[in-house]
Image (cartoon, helix red, strand yellow):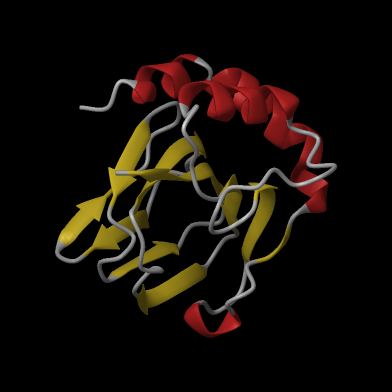
Length: 155
């Protein structure tokens, strides 16, 4: 479908290593009204226009994103759902972006993303793409964390 998927899936272990290096520097997702607790992020590129953040400490991931999307992209960074986190149904921001998630830590059990009436189960090392502008929600009802690389790209 999208040629860039292979580049991310082939590099997931290096991306995961960078996550492990910053995992203690995660911050709460700023829209507190759309989740119960435990949704944390570490930004590499700012929303919405993809300006690179200073001191993100993820050079491999940042370089890969810039190489794969030479004409630009939106936000990108790591997204972690702690155990028993629920993201309520909501619409993403309007724009010309689709959203990609690359699975880095995916617990077994009740942990998924729902976009309209489609349920998506993340897999380690695999990328899923969805339209963030449609109503969607996610949950992690397990006792382990779910971690993805989150990336907005021009459709």
